[in-house]
Length: 395
Ligand code: ADP
Ligand code: MG
Image (cartoon, rainbow, N blue to C red; front, top):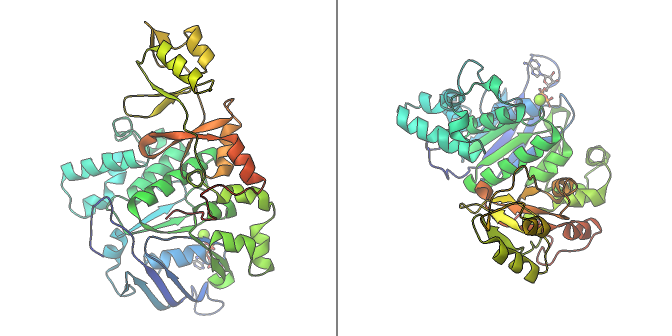
């Protein structure tokens, strides 16, 4: 595992071979002879009852906990005897509530590992800003703040940024989004998927939320006491063919709605909706929107980001027009979703808007198109989307 600060470090494989952890000399092993292979770049999610050994398994991968026996290979190399400090610099680790140091600024928190690696100030500062941008926090606004000045969700973002600081090929996350509200959690999940798409990092995550496992996991490992693997398969298979009653209980009911959390915005066709740039002549835009048979228009700023979604009527009333040109309307919230958002989150978002759809954005909030509520409803009713071909994850 070469130390690297490249943006696209890519991921590496992780293999557990007969790994056991006993906390005391007697009694049951917390992790009992577990073997599993995680492919490079894969997202694997551990679910299972409290105390079944999820955290212990995770912490053995970066040797925060030493296995009693067995081998752990990362990128094919046995790391059970490697230098533990060096190992941990190559493995990002995210825990609940970010685990930030309260007396350090956001920049200093993110710069910890680069500091340990001896990067100079300039290189670290550049990297900190890059990472803040990556996790969706404006660098100038956040780098000098302190953790307590940030919301829970923002702190969690900084926790992810810190874990990614040195471009680690492996990211371990222990119930990272457990302490944030559901809407923020959905955003953080989308952010994580989009970061994963960009960096290709191998991610092992623990969650108690099965929906989260379905949304994020390429594969889900359902664990029982002693971290015994009851089922280790794709979300689709775990949902459709739970290995036994234990798994079935975890999966729960509501298969139709589950389909919505299995399908992503990127998997369904988007509408080619009328757009306009700020500063364009309002009359021309209005004619164009009417010509397209639509009643609203998505406004884009100079960087191609969707900034408003006014109705044609409002445009004609002159609500967001000055000197005949389109300007940013004041206080005009509208529904947006990322392309990795599930249709379940998308539906929640749509229900808060009157457009019967949501604006879809890509990286750095660039506008991609509009998803309509009809598409979501047809998936809910079991209709197949053209071009979706049953494929959930577009790697
Ligand atoms: P999970 O993360 O799935 O809730 P853990 O890995 O934290 O489970 O714990 C697995 C088992 O090991 C539990 O029975 C727990 O009580 C025990 N355990 C965890 N940490 C320690 C420790 N430091 N000392 C002794 N027992 C521990
Ligand atoms: Mg735990």
